[in-house]
Image 1 (cartoon, one colour):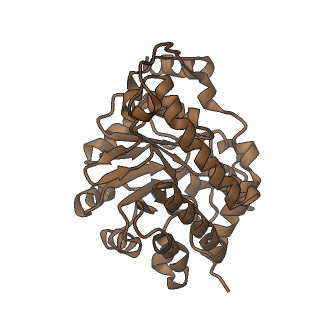
Image 2 (cartoon, rainbow, N blue to C red; image 1 turned 30 degrees about the vertical axis):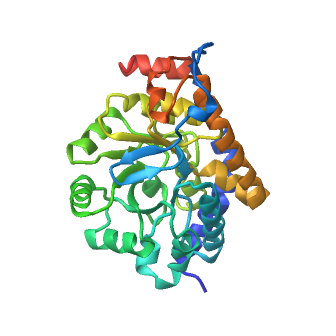
Length: 344
């Protein structure tokens, strides 16, 4: 019989797919419009789609499979399928939180299957921001990981009936960044980041930040459906959207990653125009895998890798980092947000 935490992982998978339509009812990237250039003056085969996030962290494509799951038998099957596709399409892949694997040896195969399936690919381990240096090293070693994500999930924990109630993370993040030999990515789990948060992370040495905004998988909604003690549905719309968070990060010296509500190649391009150096996709791919199977997700990944170089050509970008020079306008609530926050 699987543990209570493994059961929780299965609940997360089930509720994430069940609530997909509700969580994705607003497509916030529609409030970003790109200015068409009728003279791109380049060819598709001139596009370089590799991304250098850090000295020792290169991605072959500007999007990757963001953290989804791990810790149960069902999660193992999902991770194996994702790892097979990551290997085929040369995509980086992040795992779900390894905390359960560090506590429960029986849960480890649901994570190690990723590296076993994709021995030469880029694999990103994942832990909470309160992890000790020993735990972080153990997680990295377990997967032979190329990087470590530290997730910030205060809103999720506060809605979770068994969640944490104390959040003192910043000093610990500084210790981990200083003490680990692989790049450390600090990421939200879908509630976005403000300019002040980004600045504080940079001050303690964080050089890779995933702003992960509202618009994709909604862990406040998921945990509230699990919470039979207290209804906290008023947090369903908590936080900044991904485009808002990217605007907050535009003057950052850190490498910025975007995730949350990315559902098509044009979203990837728009995220890059707003300043992202790479883009993580979780909910959209997971929903497709669960409801339509591996062949459907395989075809979508092929389509994305065909379309992205064409879109980069359309805006005259030889590489993903060139997108920051593309002209754009903001509309609706996003424009109002940017005005009030002094971001434009």
